[in-house]
Image (cartoon, rainbow, N blue to C red; front, side):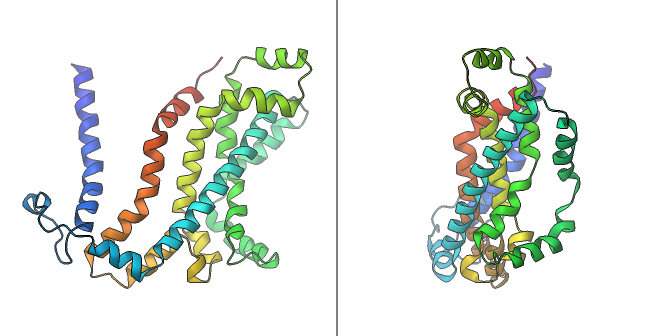
Length: 270
């Protein structure tokens, strides 16, 4: 009985979260002025049109913004995961005197709010001439220590026999990391990578400050600019929002199995 109640509650929560998403897509296909508030308007498919999508794609640079966000998200995710995995391997499997201090120093980065670093970060990027450049957005995003913490937790749960066997065979540290620990932590790295990608995709404050030209904007900053000029057009707003949501939805659907597996295995101790 308790399990049935849990399933019903889960189903109810899923419906609550899905309804606004479905409404957004329904309204995006409706003619301008039809907001599909009633159930009758929801199930009325006679007036569906692609005119809103044509308008958004032709009157804005949303495809360029989407491409910029995609490039930044992919590059940021790959580099951050590689750095986090290497650092996690060092903190989890290597022994050195100041390990506790350096790990605490890395983790303390989570305590510093982004807003507190905007001014010094802007001055730094300005001096190295990376304003209005995708690398001016990518490089500051590589310092998030959350991946380090989670991957280290995952590696701590792996048996130490792997390391001992590799050392007996004469395996060096870098080869050991690449050949043994990267495959074993793949699920955790994928789940953390999805988190980094979505976080990069939704990043607004720093790209808004660092990007000046419309062509170099990312979706999170370019979309509000376009919507501000169409604030009274609900269908246009929902269409632009639907286009912006599609890439992250695809990433989540394709990799959701790895998210669940990675989160579940991160807390397992060997």
